Length: 283
Image (tube, rainbow, N blue to C red):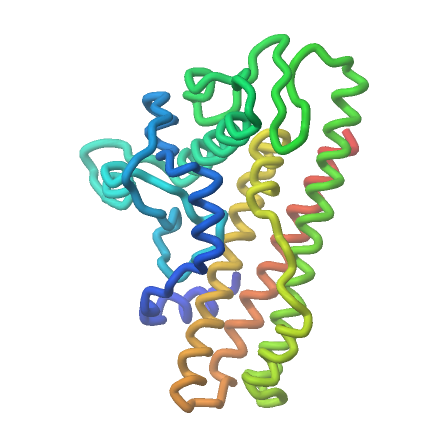
């Protein structure tokens, strides 16, 4: 992202804590079954916990599902703390622990004895073991499969992942274009909202995207995280513009330059992510 955009974002005042979409909260609670992913990760503890939904990037305005995880009170407090006395849990470690928990809950809810034990998930990834077949979101992974079948499965999941990422990035670009028209004074905010309502909200399954990356394409994690970070920056600018507009300041031109820079950053990073995915599939 351009330095001017980064500087502009750093100078923004922290927006008021926004209420996470209840539908998104419900998904986190259902997928975790109110189990703390760090208790599960560290202690193989699958008991129900009193806890909270944590914002993993510690930005309370980012209520997207990939940025949320259910943590017990102790682990939430520990994750949010900053200390030089010990190595704290990392963002990626919690994401891996959360996704492993989701996969395990899915098996339990399937009504069968999970073939993957909590102990085998201690590393934060899904270790299926030799000769084991485990259903994860409808896919059969691991076990003794012919190399050709494994290659075909990987290619199919790669094509699925590419389609989901491409659809998501196109949706971001479409939203960016319409909101930029508001900043330029070509649309009112109400007109922009009418357009977005008519289009409807696309069903982006970020849990599926992250599961595919962590299980099948871990080399893409850094590139994917870069896109998420750029999208967070874009959302902060959009939120600041919305607040200013709501307060009667309808001249959005001061937001336009950093907004365009942030969107260009997403386009470049998204293109890199898709190209690297194609390279992996073609190997």
